[in-house]
Length: 203
Picture 1 (cartoon, rainbow, N blue to C red):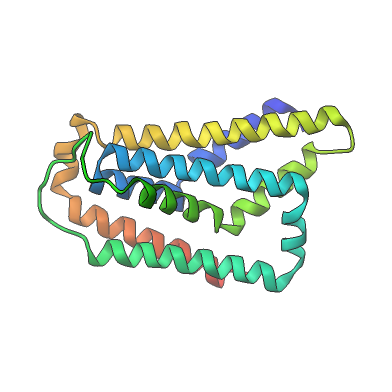
Picture 2 (tube, helix red, strand yellow):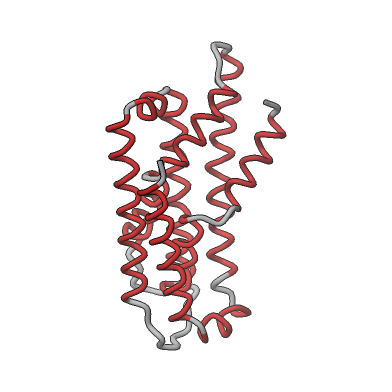
């Protein structure tokens, strides 16, 4: 598979709306730009984990072991549903401005949320494994190519979700977002619950 095709495929995967997008959006709107960017960094770090075990072939072993794969799948589903329900029940209609540099943000909490949201997603695991089986071979040069592509995906995730956090905390959008803050929280929460439910029931 040509590198250009892989690069385009990676871009399409990253910008496609999913649980990561919803979580970054939710944290950005509720806790400010810093929280959103930290969540984005957490997602990017999780991509590094997927890349590591894909290159080592561990994802193949997991995908072939129904029990292990089921544990990962249900853990990911439960975490998404938990995040979604927490967002729905804690949604506030108070019109507090979203601070670009809001203080009191728990950095580790935001990083952990982004990291777990992505690393517990078996779809992401299987995506990287399927791609890396096309890229990696016994040829050393292909190993370097795989590592380069992995770094590209890490950076791409960080840049894209960092941009989402920045855009949705801009002053231009703040006045519009504040009017629908509670509804947006509920929609994001419902989205996370839906992603989790689909992940749990999909075979």
